[in-house]
Amino acid sequence: MMENDEMEEDLNSTTNAMSNLSLDRNAQHQIIHDLNRRLVQITHEIKQMNNKLKKDTEEYYRILNQDSEDFENGATEQSHFLVEYERQISHLEQEKKNLENEKDRGSGGSSGSSSTHFHRRGF
Image 1 (cartoon, rainbow, N blue to C red):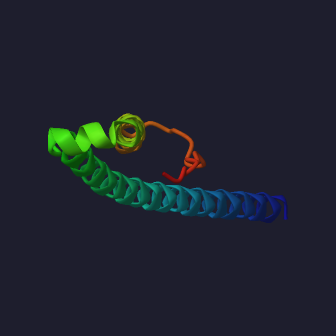
Image 2: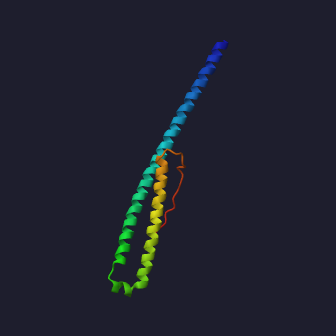
Image 3: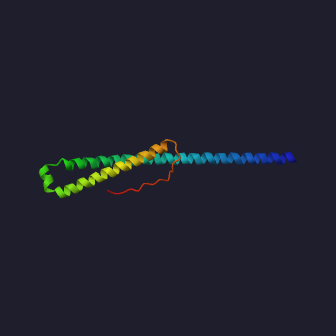
């Protein structure tokens, strides 16, 4: 009788261990899935920033290359736009760098938090 009880205990213990292992695998798969989804999201955000950066840069150079007479007539307003575009370009480049750093950390196998949130700002 004692042997049967021990065997049943061993069987239950083994079953519990296998169940925990299965849960661990499922948790790992979920973490990998979440990290992959965040990586795709970061890549998409970087593409959006690149597009915005390109448009702002084009607008910046368009204003900068305007006929000097037109520029002198609207110097105050144009200067404001140039300063604003320079600020936006700098901000977008920094955001892009931050996202690329997060993307690199995520793909490097480190266990960074997948709950990092970025606050979007309108321009």
